[in-house]
Image 1 (cartoon, helix red, strand yellow):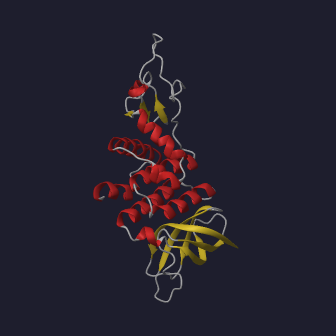
Image 2 (tube, one colour):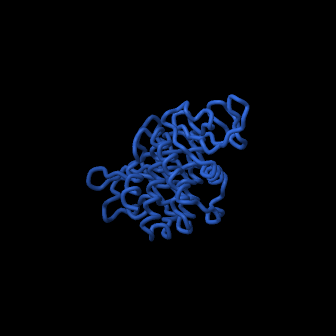
Image 3 (cartoon, helix red, strand yellow):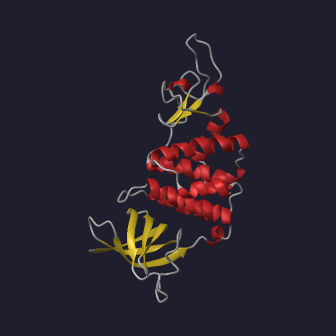
Length: 261
C-alpha cells in the first residue's frame, strides 16, 4: 500500500451505509480514481464539507494495485467554485460536465488535458454569457481529449475538403448546404456522400464552422462568439447524439437540463 498525492476534482459521490461515501475523483496524475471516505458523513468528520461534488482539492489516498476502491487519507480544499454554485443553471451544467467525464473516462488512464479542461471550465463558468454555448465547447474539447473527436474538416467517406465546394459526378461544383453529420461514421459528410448514412443529421456550414471555432477557442474568447438559435439547435442535436452513441446511454443531468432549463 503506497500513499499518493495529487490534485483532484470530485466528479461523483455515492452513499455507502450510514456514515461513508464512495467518491469518484478526476486527477491529472492517475486519471479517474474511486475511493472510500470512511465516516465522512459523521458530524465529527473533518472531511465532510470538503468532499462535495465538483470540489477541487489536493487528494491523499492509499493506493492498492488491482483494487477497485482506494482509501482516502486526506483532501485539502483548493476551490469550491463558489461563484458557479450561486446560479442554478451554471451549477446544473457543472454537474453535467462531471457526469460526462465520469461516463467516458476510464480508470487508470491518465489525461492531464481532461483535468485542466474540467478545472478551467469550472473557473470560467460563472462568467460565461452563453452557458449552452460553453457546454458545446466543453463537449467538443472533451471528446477531442478523450480520443473521440469528430472529423469536421473533410468528408468521412470520400475525404474531400469541407472548405471547398464539392464536385458531383458530372464535374460540377455543388453547394455545401446539403452536408450532413454522421454519428456512426464519426464526422461530416459532403453533399455527395450524405446519403451514405440514412441517419445522418443535417448541419449547415455555419454551424460546422462554429463547432470548429469552439474546438480551438480559449475560454476567454468565448464571450465574443455569437450563435444563432439555429446554431444552438443543430450543435445540441449533433453533439448530444454523438455523446449518447459513445456512452451508450442518456446522461441523467443532460435529461434534467432539457426538461427543466
